[in-house]
Amino acid sequence: MPELAEVELARRLWHPAVGEIITSVDTHPKTRIFRDCPAKLLQQLLPHTTLTATRAHGKRLLFTFSPPITNNKSPITEVPLQVELHLGMSGRLYATSPDHRAEKHDHFLLRTAHRTLAYNDYRQFGGLKLHRHPDPWADLPPQVLDRAFTLRYLSALLDHRPRVALKALLLDQAAFPGVGNWMADEICWRLAAHPSTPVGKLDPAALRNASRTVCCGALRHVADRNFALAGTRTEAFAPGSYVHLVPPSSWLFQHRWKPGGACPTCKKTLSRATIAGRTTAWCPACQLL
Ligand SMILES: [Zn+2]
Image (cartoon, rainbow, N blue to C red):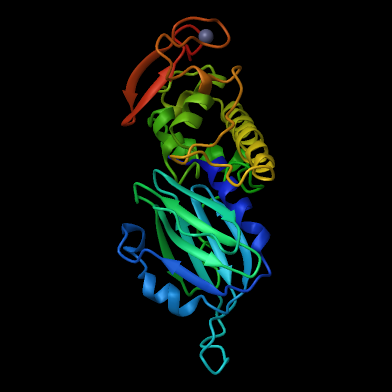
């Protein structure tokens, strides 16, 4: 499932269209991605609007468009249109030529004079929502790299739920937005803590540092490097939504699913179990906390 770095990469791929007018919208209206927002409504409202902003928060994307207009060119409302998008398990965004012909799993295409913005999702667990509120994300919790994710804020989170397992807290999108399974394992490994450790036993400063390091590194290795690749190829996402370039072999990421995968630091064979409902890998020698 795309985590915060893949989501940020998706945002960057559509961002160059900011300032451009949507000339037409193509959809596969019967696909499940429109279960919360009918394709017909998007086809009615989006043409002739301008994409004005793009945002990412955790695993969510938000695209803001100028207020929709009627046939006589007057705005229907003064409130901008906000389209929230979730990539689900296999969703991916890409930008391509204005005359792009829809591929099999391209369910939502926004066309401008300069490009086509495509949302492709073969498993269709992703989806769209339409917001009319000017700031639909006003109440979302801070992300790990936000200024508001202070030591004080994190300490209060740990004090509130001291007995919860570290892995479970890391996967809680209300606490660590955008952190998913592989990033949670990476944070536990860098913290030298077993994924089941109750968070009340942890040093909040060490947890904050480890989570910031993993979030920064994921953005660098996944969002930055694959975005640079998008300049030379049409897609940064490989088929099946996974990105072409991933974190290096000094990260747990490269070893966690390999049969006989070993800890990049001590070379001991990794342990595996289901923790917090997800398959988890850790080093039995390094993660003793
Ligand atoms: Zn180790």
